[in-house]
Every structure is written in structure tokens, then in C-alpha cells.
Length: 242
Length: 242
DNA sequence: CGCGGCCTTGAGAAATGTCAACTTACGTGG
DNA sequence: CCACGTAAGTTGACATTTCTCAAGGCCGCG
Image (tube, rainbow over all chains, first blue to last red; front, side, top):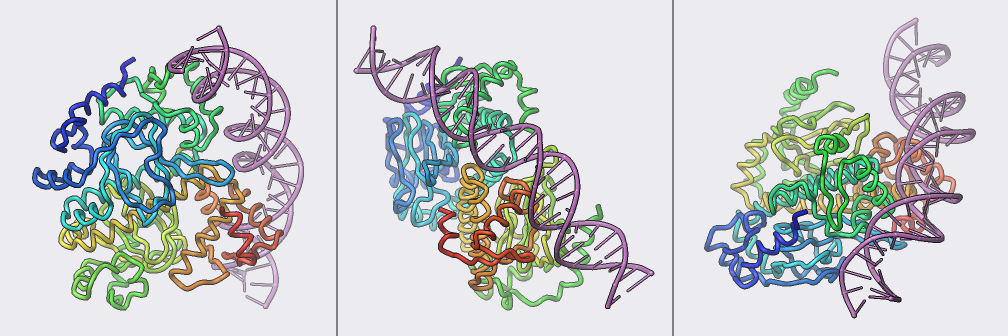
């Protein structure tokens, strides 16, 4: 089984010591893709690179929204807490993803690191000023927001009307496709988040996630490995998702 | 099924001499709020007023996205169809709402009229051209997209982690608040959509919606009327929603 | 080696779904 | 203006999926 996480780390190793966006390996995926060299330099001067260890909180629901972030390595879990310990994981931010698209004055969700995460942090005020001076950056941000909205709509359909089997299969497939854009296509899908994270994302329980994955494995659709699954039967797998 | 497109075009002709944007009652709520008088005139020249009778389709999932719309009167239901007759209602567009924020080349959802609907239709190409010339319009559209995203995230939490009682109560409250912005605050909440629409929006069945509303009425939290409910106990009602 | 976190599995419970009957509201045509 | 037909809404009885609670297994780490 190939280790996607390692791959991503390698991609970013160059970034860790190179302060400039120009060397960033996820640039073409991130907000930054909209900018030319001089603009990139400008954005660069606003960015602060941050390392976040596993499980550490990046930002907290209800706090004043002082910064926005672009993920350059690792996986971030984004969630809302409800009464009685209920939690909804809205999604997972992967390298290239932007955190802070759906912004008001206060954060509407909590974000914390699943594994070791590397971020570019932007002061919100500064970022918004840059935004007002760079229409192409605004346009890029808008198209990212639009994309997020499309994904959110798919997720609503999943949460509202899909069976547990469909939910789990669709989640695995969507993670496969997202990793493919970052690190290339692979039948092995890294799942660095816990079963509880997945459950809270899919609106089911940890036990149901576990049983469903076991069931998919018994049907020889996947192999269940540590922090990953391998898709064996593309075809039948895709059928579950329609 | 009849050819909706033809019918809509006919209706459009018959209402082409509708009043200018300046007289529009929902202008301050809609995209148009970002524009000054001369810009408004420009937008006006792109807009075609359209009347849509109840149940008629405005746009269809999978079709080429040729136009975007601003709702000026009535209620639009926006949904995705899944296999086996399952449906997820993503939301209801009220006067002032924009249809086509989450846009790719093809529509990602179907939209049709709940009651009698009036729209401003914009050719997508023309609208996008205007957008590239009017940064404030883009900025306004982006903030509307951001707002949609926040709402979508709340809806995910609702669909993923809320009980049927909470879902129904939250829906009624959200409709109350949305109508308040359009027509002023009132304890009576108009619900022009059917129980099936509500059920498919909340990820439950029509029977569960019905039972839950009956239950809320028995508890004297609401009065259940035709196409509306009246909220009797703000306090206890709000408590269910936290 | 043993501890703790995470995952899996099983058995019974609960919420919601399904199916079916019945009521109500409403518009049409006699 | 009434009678009828249809669509929408309500209610009840029973089915099913998923949840809850509980026990045990696996694995990395001190």
C-alpha cells in the first residue's frame, strides 16, 4: 500500500524552508493559482507559515474570525458542535483547500488538525484588502466558494436521502478523487481521520461505519487496511454510489 | 410533461413591459443591492421578467446552464433527484434570492415553482460579462454565495445530527425569519410548499412531518393552519432548536 | 508487558420508515 | 350551489434501519 501522506509531505518538504509561494507544490490547487509572479510575492508577504500537530485546534466556532488559512499539507477536520455531545463534521480540508470561505465576523465552525498540518495563515483584514485590490483573486475565491457550495449540496443529498452503505461508499470514492488531484490516482485511499470523524461526517454512528466497511470488505469491494482502504472493484463500487 | 421552456418564454413575452428595477420591492435584498442607478439601468437592460405558474419547472438538473435568475415574487423549490424516486430538496428560494450561485456548465439541481413565481432572468454569458466589469457586483454575489454556504452548513448539521422534532421546529423558525426580512415579522409563518417538499428538505418522510406538526400543535407550541403555522410559544420553540 | 485509544462485533432498543385507511380541502362541472 | 373527483394531509399498525450499550480485540507506545 502506498502512503499518500508521505507523498504529500515530500511534496511540501521544499516549501518548509523556502519561504516563497513560488516553490509551493499545491499552488495550482489553492487560491494562489489566480495570481501572477508579482501578485504572488505580495500574497507571500502576508502569509505566515504555521505547523499544527495532530488534534490541535486551528480555529474555534464562535471566535472572532481574525484569520483565514490555506492548507499546504495534512488534513483538517471542520465541524460544528451541537447540544448533547452531537457533532457534525462539515468536511475535511486537504492540501490546496481554503479555510474561511464561509465567513462572517465569527467562525461558524471549529477546525482542527487530523494529522500533522501545514498552513498559510492570512490576517483577515489584510487578506480582504488584498482581495479588494485584486479582482482576479476575488474571482478565484468566488469560484472556490461556488465549488464548496456544489459539494455541500451533494453532501445534503447524502445526509438527507442516502443509506449507510451509500454514504460510506460515496465518502471513500470522494476521498479517492480528492487525493488523486493532489498526489495522483491510486486505488489505495488514505483515510487519516478516525472512524468517529467519518461517522460524524456521514451522519451515522461509528459502529455503523465499522460494520459497513466490514461488509464492503466481505463483498470483496475493498480491502480494509490501517488508515486506508484499497478499492478492488471500481465498477461495483461506483454502482453503489449512483 | 409539457415543454416548460416554451411556456416560460411565452409568459416572458407577456410580461416584458414590467416595471424597472428601480421600482423593484425586493431590490435591497437581491444581487441588485450592490448597484447604483446607472449600473441598475444596465442590469435592467439584461433582465427579462418571467412569470412561472405553480409547479412549472424553471430549470432542470443536467441542462446546460444558460441563465441565472433572481426571484422577485413567490417561492421556488430547488432539489436533486436520486435513484428510486428519492429526492433531496436543497432549499426554497424566496423573493430576493438568487438562483445560480453554485454554477458549473450544467445545472446541478432542478428548480420549479411552488406557487406563482416571478423572476428576473439573465443570460448567463451576459451576466458574467457584466460581473467582470462590475467588481462590486462580483463582491455582492460572493457574499451571497458565502451566505448560502453558511446556510448549507447549518442544513448539513440538521440533516446529519438532528431529531425529527428539531428538524421541523428549525425549519419553521428559519422560514419565519426569512419571511420577516421580506414582509416584516409575524407569528404566522406561511408554508406554501407541500408536506412532501418539507419532508424531502428535512430528510424525513411526509408522515413524520405530519406527526411532528400535530405533536407541536398538541403541545400548544403552534397552531396548524392551511399552508401556514402560527407560533404560539417563541420561548419553548426556540429551545427545541438549540 | 501492559495501558489506552481505536476499532470491531453482537444483542436488544428506539426512532423513523412503510403501508394502508381515512379525512379534509379545493376546484370543476353539472 | 352542490356533488364529485383529486390532491394533500393525518393517523394507525407494523417493519426496518440504525442506534445504543456492552464486550472484546488490535496495535502502537511508554
